[in-house]
Amino acid sequence: MAALDGARVVLGVTGGIAAYKAVEVSRRLVDAGAHVIPVLTEGAEHFVGRTTFDALASEKVQTSLWDEQSPIPHTLLGQSADLIVVAPATARLLSDYRTGRSADLLTTTLIATAAPVLLAPAMHTEMWEHPAVQENLDVLASRGVHIVPAEPGRLAGGDIGFGRLAAPRTIVAHAERVLAGGDLLDRHVVVTAGGTSEPIDAVRVISNRSTGKQGYALAEAAWARGANVTLISTVDREAPVGVTVVPVETAADMQRAVMAVDDADVIIMAAAVADFRPKDPAAVKIKKDGDAVPEIELEKTHDFLVDLGNNKPTGQVLVGFAAETDNLIDNAKGKLARKKLDLIVANDVSAPDVGFAHDTNQVTILISDGSQIEVPLNSKRVIADAIFDAVVRVQTTLP
Ligand code: CTP
Image (tube, rainbow, N blue to C red; front, top):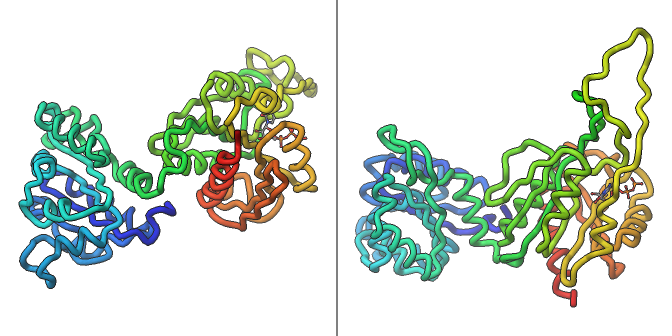
């Protein structure tokens, strides 16, 4: 969440039942390092108390054009903000903002700002579907206002339908994407994650210790930087916001899923793909048979990263990983050349707090032009952004 770190975010809250979720949005923004200034409308105060925001946000709640310290709070707020988020945004807020009606502190601030604006609408289904509301959203989007669409789900009064406020984690991920600068805007980034499982029989597998955390952090970072992201994954983790997940299990499944993508601008093979698999997996569970121990004959899997390197389309950036326990740099350099990669991320998985299952990592990025970037121990998300910094650098030098 690097883009939110230190950012001044005005969090507008309007009067809808989903206003209670704005408390969670505020907390998550603060956790990501943002300085959050809550602005509540009169309607919002019917649903949530200002004391909660006073305690959780970075500044006290502001509500009025008239009762604050400054005679011009709206211009101060508007000019000093890096981002304005309105969650929830009611139908009335959309209408006022579209027509430029400065009805209160929030709408006046929206009109007085040059900062990017992110709206997370929420309302009853009938209102959401009304042509006036949809037209207001279209017009605002055409002016460059960012919108986190409402979702289907349970609404006030127990109704089920469209119009529910997006989840706080979704709103905060969008806020980060708006601020991040979009250096991968509209690029298709494909990331593989997790260790493959190769069946021995109907219930047993050979696998490895990869948990997919680095791959998921890469997918999250790519989406934040504006990319369309496909995550081909063997693990069952919560999908990062905005990312399309393709579940796979074996090396062969993963190969098929990767090869099915024909428009990737960046491919990052973060998965720990099995090098060997049982040659003839049994269709049923192998039963114990006295003292006999079954022999499992292995065969090599196909190294499809080699195929990707041999058939790399012009302009594509191909990234491999080298998880090593010894001779880190020499082994990684060998793989970089042999697999015709643009860059390889080498990590010493025998070092403490590094590699499989940890929340942190420490890597060396080797680039095909011979340069080398050391990325010290940090969260896997920070490592992911360092990898994309290198990807973007390489991409600008490609023909
Ligand atoms: N890889 C792949 N297909 C395989 C094996 C590996 O696409 N069947 C990819 C991995 O996703 C990783 C890179 O190749 O990005 C390096 O994998 P690794 O297992 O470290 O390299 P190998 O070439 O298999 O070498 P070794 O196992 O001898 O270290």
